[in-house]
Length: 384
Image (cartoon, rainbow, N blue to C red; front, side, top):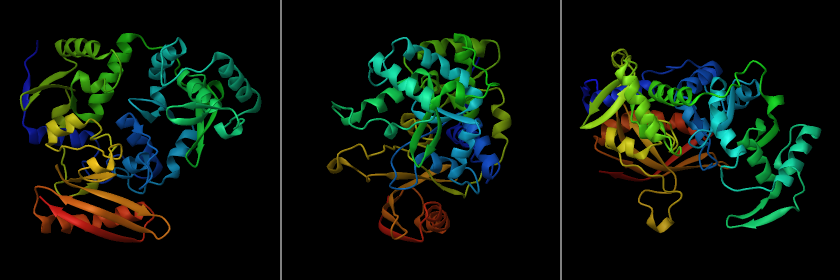
């Protein structure tokens, strides 16, 4: 077993933030090129439906890419440079990672359950219509065909399209608004995309190295976040890679992590101590809540799925990163008819409030503009 190297919490935080692209303004570049570079480096951008402010996939990219525009994701998808599939959740992924989606697709095609099962006869009918008629949305099917579930009513066709997508027989060609447009995989995927099934070793290496490139350090459990049955294999693979020098073992605050050998050169980069980032709850930096608490001392939970009476902070609370620490959170919504960004509650934590507001106001104004807003209204301010 190779010896571990100790990093302080401050060093670990710096390594994580640098690896996430927060080293300087425009770390990935600007505009559409910067958007693609960010997706390629981060490995995925989580898609979410909640729209009390701009949706999470746009928010995450805006936080890192100057001059980001919402249309870029559709343009990159239609030009076949990114694709949609399941990471730990629904996500935009680099097209170079396509072959690593194949193990999951194969498992679902061979009977592994995703969310629900759909009758094979229905799947064949839906696939046949897409093959004959071209790209289709769920609304293009007979809306009278519905079935009752615990989640309410869903079109049978909508479920079939989703199942065919998860099996790899369909891909999402583009979105119209937020609605998916499906087509046959062979008509969406460019002919030069590698479609060879990765071996188990290749798949494990992909999970390990893509995670560490974008996150700086990590544990096997973090690398396999929400993936079934893979964590013991990731642990064995990480130990073997550490033995042959392809990974380093780090100790941070008594916990063990793996990192790339290049971690020291990453730490040598400069990191702003003053920039403020208002982040999405689904941002890559903090999607794993236990990791955020361990490394940053920031205890965060999204509460939109919690009963209103049990919420501690609010419905859709956004973490606020100030330099190298989380300095608060705010419950916000955009009123699209009036253009007013409402900060219902703002929590400022463990920092001097005057210094915080000097940096926060310009960031808040930029955030308002990103959301298509014109004015900002701040409600309760709680300083702790």
